[in-house]
Length: 338
Image: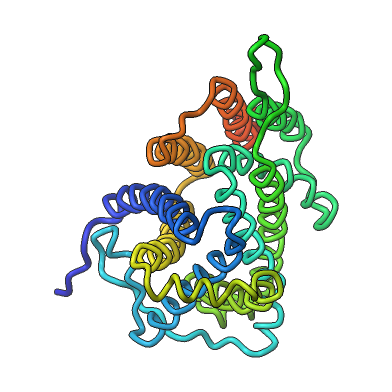
């Protein structure tokens, strides 16, 4: 009798744990990698984001070479088989919009978190606002009236988190512009990514040739890496020799760059495993809890405490996101008994 590993219920719990842990460690390693190249003013943020996807691309190729995906080991189960997908050139062309949006969301997130890891997370919590706007205008999928009513709560929370109390007791807007601008840009890319992902998977032939979400995610990261490369050279090409010199000599940069890429890949895979088998309510609560835990963890890692306004504002925004996710189920008419 072959060894199958832990029961699915135990594995699911462990996937949750390592999804959260992976997300927290990604944020930590990402911040450390950016600091190692000189921080947000170094002119190397796009380079770091691109090289992280480069790590993801190498990891994906290694999995195809060994024909195994080790992610399930985190749930104390045997690795799953992962063969090279049987995609055609036409399939790859159809996947480019998704890869472009995924790469854009990743790069913009790195810029946002490089600006301010804590405020960047708060801005990222406003993703449903952009998802609703993009879904309505670009894909003809408008949210329900109840969901729309939750959007001002999210926006208001982010706005309140942007306030700073002056010495005279008055309030003024004060925030990291990089975190706000790129956080909203990341939310926009993420919204388009969701729409493009649904569109791609609606083509049953493409989905079948990919052979599973694991292969689709792998191809998306590889394409994303090659999409970011020319952008990196166009925007930071002059600094690339400086980056390479640091990479050759700085073991701290080497470690954090590789680990941030690996954590990014693995936590996204584990998130897929967990959300695929849980209900909508559990998934919404899990995503909300993840944001809170990551913010608390990054506050501890960076030594930068949230202001009272940021605590209250982020609480309002994240509560609004949770309500946005659940309100249609909460207000759903109960089926009448026969």
